[in-house]
Length: 100
Image (cartoon, rainbow, N blue to C red; front, side, top):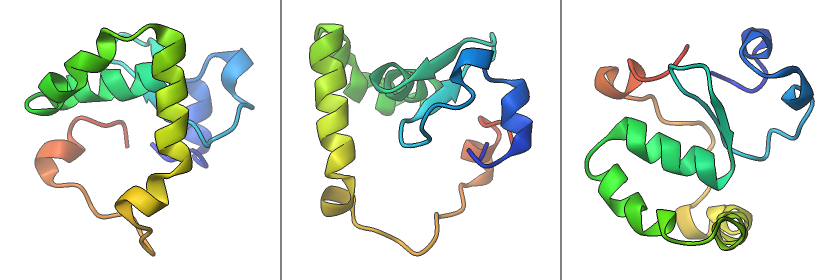
């Protein structure tokens, strides 16, 4: 769901509604919210193979080291992955895994 969506506010814990959209957020089907490196790992788990396998080594890192690495990658994301004028449309298979 888009950060700008007013619909997302109903899913976010009150204390987190005003935090920066610069961080990745994931809401699981159980209603638990995740942020930063935990959100990235949860997303990999939700997306399944091969992402959950690729993310497994990150679970072995201590949380502060994982958060530091997450922020380093986030700061360099455009240099690493490029910048696009718009987001690609997800396939129907991927789309059903998200709240829209």
